[in-house]
Length: 221
Image 1 (spheres, rainbow, N blue to C red):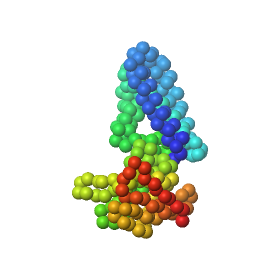
Image 2: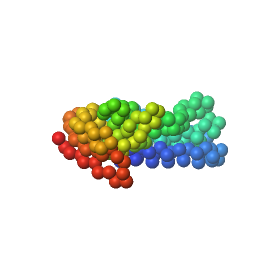
Image 3: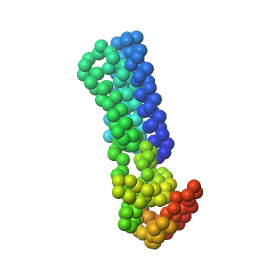
Image 4: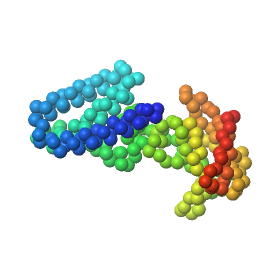
């Protein structure tokens, strides 16, 4: 997912939650005829969304994002209205997305922008003994750009970070240890998939002593 699409999804969803809260507060002041008109408009968006999935798949992500965020925005108003109970139940589904947002923001934004679950590649790789290369968690991890990793040493239930902010443009598929000197330096060769499933690799050299500014050299193979 591109960073632009991800940021658009985040802004659109949060804005729709704010609008939903405002409309929930002023719901009693909005006539039922206006509410029904808004529901009809949202139903048209649903129809357009379904047609886009069938015939215009390249733009279906943005259209679905508009449809869903519009549903979230008007859900508060519909729930507090005197309209049919089935309508209230239907629009409650949109607000239940808040639970997914709190549980896993990356999951929600991947579903909104791409209509699929985020790719679940391996998050950690054993280097030697109790040293691991671990993916740093981030709400923006569904983006394929600037995936960060760190080298940690497992110490029982705790992890000691030996090096952090090891950045790659793509998520790593596998790691080969070229040389490992405990307490000094790790030389690794990492493998990953680029666009169109093209395999590539890069060599990194990372010191295993945390400093304010550690130099990490990444070389193309």
